Image (cartoon, rainbow, N blue to C red; front, side, top):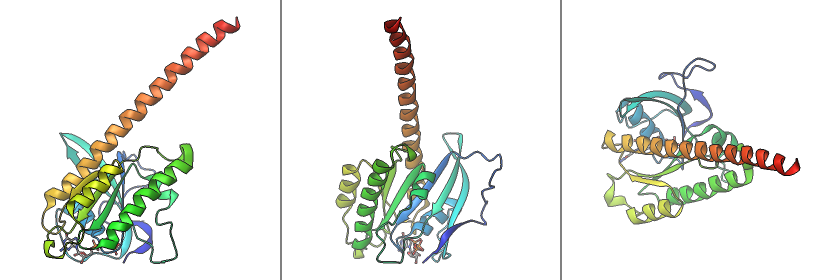
Length: 223
Ligand SMILES: Nc1nc2c(ncn2[C@@H]2O[C@H](COP(=O)(O)OP(=O)(O)OP(=O)(O)O)[C@@H](O)[C@H]2O)c(=O)[nH]1
């Protein structure tokens, strides 16, 4: 279990106020013990170390995709211990995130239900927050611990269906077994973030054109 209040990791800390260019803030959510830290550490170091620190952290990492440098900030979050709390995601986290990875364990049904709740919560928070939150924050759903087939309690189809119905990306992986699956998750999310940024830019462009046209035609009508 991680300690609340994110700390900047020792592994390439983010320098606040520095010139470091931030391209993608990635928030990892999901129930306890599903492998959020394992995924993060695999992506950062290519290693699976088995036991992970109990501290909620934000890590920075530079990666190359198609020859282009991408700068990641990764918030490995804490699922609240307090069973009375229904707000398992804060507005601050969503304001910060450009994209979200929701992790469950394929052998823990409860963790799958947590992911389902968290997708709905994110959608509702965005709807209710108006312009404050990015309306298109992309989500990737990840079923982890694929190596534990004999203990599977969530089928691949259920995971894929949830992702499809909520317009999210989907991967089933084993952070323990391979680095490649973890890499696909982060790269898949980057693709979705790029798409959503392009859409937002297009929408802003169209709004600008509409504004200029109404200024011109509105003026003419008034003259
Ligand atoms: N078999 C298997 N075990 C895994 C896998 N990923 C993580 N684990 C194990 O699951 C346990 C929990 O992993 P963590 O990465 O600490 O999970 P977490 O979601 O960060 O947990 P919290 O700190 O409680 O939020 C550890 O014992 C890991 O070694 C996997 O793909 N396969």
